[in-house]
Image (cartoon, rainbow, N blue to C red; front, side, top):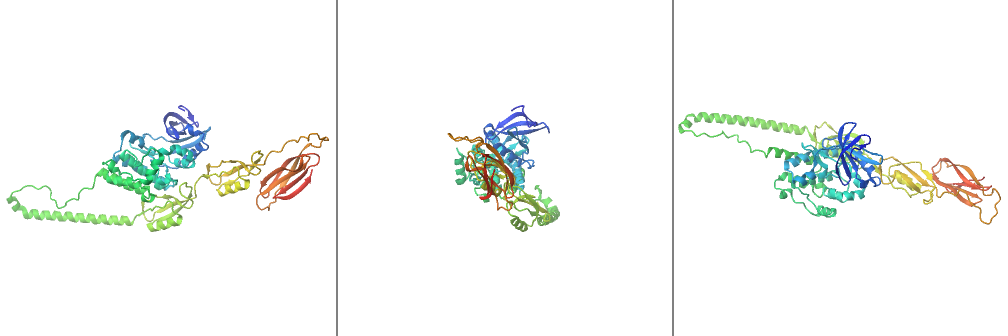
Length: 564
């Protein structure tokens, strides 16, 4: 692989490492002259049906994410049977490896790492995308402190291919929320849980729930309460420990309602760690250091000093009162002039309108958008994001989900053509004109194959093409019965062209059947298929002998009876 040029563009320079799903290579984009991380599914997964294509589809779905703390996906494609994903090359070490090598991370540094992570999550959630598989391995910290979150989009592949997820489970189970382990879809709340596990691991050097197997870890998450980080590491501030514990609450409703809410508390802790606790109130009555003086000096200038001290004290108090009044007025005015964007993601339009009215916010319909997280009809994007302070006259743009951008294709091989068409249309796909082929194993009118195949994900309204069985292929010639004299030409094979038209006013799909009576016998089926009203087509059948009787049935009724 080293030295190979992938897709005529990416020159592989060196191997970075192997994971359970990908081999990762440091590569150079020869077109834009930049370094990229080139990911290729590991050899053991190359043969899994549709898996490589699923990786490409998933990563293409997050190429729109553009945030300084998210490792951007530049390209995803399959060329010559091999699939690849080209991502932003993030220098540094992931948090998991950092903790393994050096133990717990100091509280200020841990907060500095988590603030960009939550900022990235808040941005992704605001555009309707959840990470779904966030782990310490996905957070990369560069030598100069830059933080990148990787592998957005991977959760969808693992959901679509549970047989692959089993190989990946011990990497993700420690960071998955209990409801995800139970089979629920990833949500904002599950991303917050994963972020809480990462904070806990950084502060303590260990995971809150650990076990020899994935089942053991899952059982502990369901039953046990984790040890408070301050018990393990007394250097952890109580406020930071409380944030971690709240984020990993078992019930989703007990966690932070959004990444923005958790981010705000982390920023407050960061400020306190940088500046220290607030200083004690200034004693405005203090006159500074006291100097020992003689009784005569005190007696001489006592009235003057007393008057001056009282004047200065009164002046300082006046200034302080004015400043406090001005500050209070400014704060009240600012509070009146700003409102906070409420949490709207996942609500219907009517619910969002009610929540916005209560918060003093005006919504603007920004159209619809695909979402793999929120159901059709739910709010899937909010701008500015929830938790942002805005002026009352500023509009909040929201998009309503029109459902996922890709949905599973139903598996219809083996079904009758009528049932297959019904399943395809009910799933939200278009039905293509079927192709007909002979088959010795698939009964007449049943589906032999489909394209795209069942189980893969495709955009709604994609055309599904079927190959439908015509039954066994009729023999090309019939040998004369043994011991029977055959006159010349009696069993001569003849090609007979037949034209058929299904009435346009027929009530739905009609079965067309052509029966032939000739020297081979009576009522042999030469053609049988389901056709649509108005279909007009030609069929060439074979007859044997000088007299061939052809009967055409449409919808079970005799349409014509002709002797050729």
